[in-house]
Image 1 (cartoon, rainbow, N blue to C red):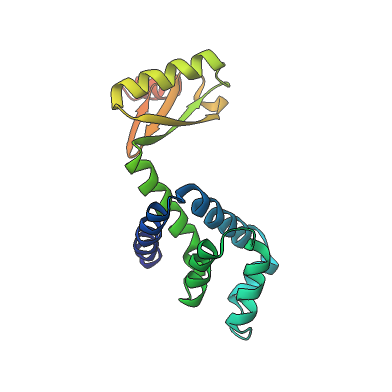
Image 2: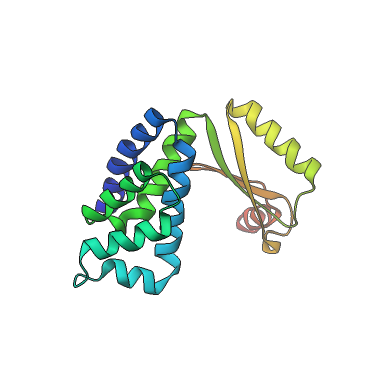
Length: 174
């Protein structure tokens, strides 16, 4: 709970700075890269979290890794480190992306089908969802053979379950 609150607060401030500098995408990419590195590289994570290592050493490493980014953008990452919030980077990035999607009217949709969609099916689904919601659709498709047929679409908290498995379960209950 606390980490998500920290993520919201920091992401809002960072997004405001990014918009002001017209660097929304660049800052997102830097933060996302830092998050991926923090979550996947155990040595890096242990180094960053080690209380015996001075922040100046940690900053030097971050500067070396992310130095290709502008120094102003890098300062955002160094600020997060200074405030001891690097462990919340996952939440900061997630909230940052939510703000971006909300401002640009983009909707995340997760769809599950028994087989991969053709490009034509994918385009039709995106167009239909876009018409219904009035937003641009960011579609993520997963394959799950256990649903037998049909599909499941998740838009935010709303789930549209048109799978044959659900139909069979409902038929079995009645």
